[in-house]
Length: 69
Image (cartoon, rainbow, N blue to C red):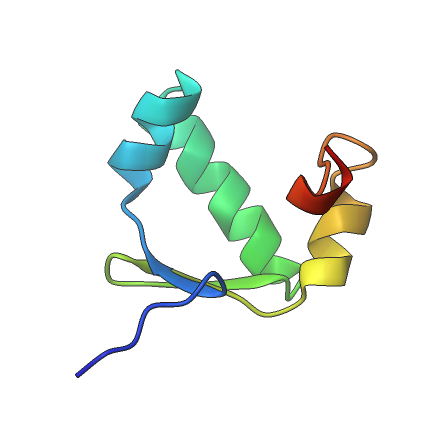
């Protein structure tokens, strides 16, 4: 049995594209770029966050942690 966490959650590229109103190809390119940076690992229908702090830095201020809202 798989235990889903915030760092390992079931996601599809098409779902992210719909949520963000972006083309699927743009989301795919972004996911690949984040993988190259070692920040995430994308598998079949799952994206695993490998370096949360790195993702925050990569966002250059676009990400605000929920606890700071």
